Length: 510
Image 1 (cartoon, rainbow, N blue to C red):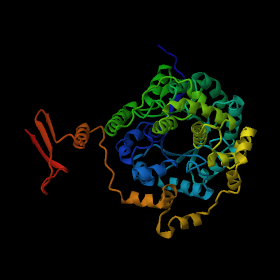
Image 2: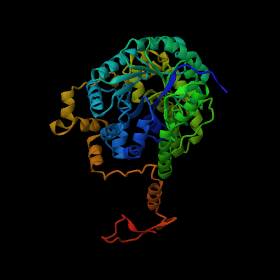
Image 3: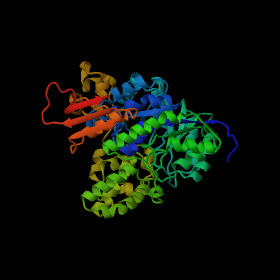
Image 4: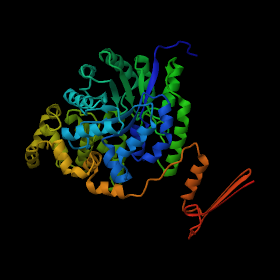
């Protein structure tokens, strides 16, 4: 038994509603799934919890028929104690560079709707972008948590990360986050890097964020704690583990076993686990579980969601047996392009080009516009300079490269943006929805029927009845418990006097 009391209390940032559901449920968690447990998450003692990102808007409007501004307001009304976070990167529309005026209006609306913290990234850890992003957030009163993204390559050395942490520490940020979105860190690498990062952070608080993609997320968190990190990003099961973040229950338990105290009320979170587990089973959504170590993952570094897409697309083409060849080609393309960090959008740029190389049967015979723009320097001069000279020459000699060389970022003022996306009769919130998803999709979202409510796990009987009533193979439900009985029956026609939607109900008690 470890009787040595360690110094410092370990605190946590919750990622369940953003990174957790993105990693495991492909952003298919609806607002109504969240609302029954917001009070529990709020009461648990988290330093903050992530809620939305710029990448969520298009998906929410088009597929879920949901307004993320409404989600933010509804959650903010219920979260009385815990700051809400949003996430952004340089490209808010995934594969397009965002005009500055649009980015700043989006930040303004975040603050107006209840977000108080912004975690910001750059896919190349570019200090000049960091400075621009931090200044924009600070002007609007948003606290910035600045990500330094971890990667593995010949260029991502200790010296690389020391230089980046020193640049980050010069900025007016609330915190720095050492972020490992690919789940690439090992306990040994964490043990070596974290002390250097803390030493060079100039007194700025540092968070630690990793994923469980290779099964090493939780032990890496413990090494970070032992090295001096006091703030850990975790998720609540069933939206933890697998390709998501480590489980709050596991990390907190192990931290205490090492003699640390933990500032989290785990009892408050158990109903959250029960609720989301019930939702997962009802909607046939994945439940996160620990995974076995995959030594190939740190080599190709393709995010889990992209591998799933590769499997699906290759299976449709009858070429699933070529998945390993595609992943091997990813390794080659990434090296030739100067080892970009495998996060959005660069992971997609590299992955798609690698798949094309394999499918066509000749490397770089066909090249995507995004890779041409990358080689032209549209995504950064450092990125363009890092490309293998022979590959860059092959790309830039193409006629399409000459066309794209004329492209410039279409800057737009806020006034022009407002006029373009609806004018005076449309709110700024809706204009931004139109920008992300398209006007027709926003109209379809607004015309959609009201979303379904999800019962809290605190009312398991209602949850069970609701689930059974939706089954097409069930016509009668009969429940008996001591002095209470309930019978529900589906009928083809329902009279006006029936008071239960979809059938008749009869309840007796004595």
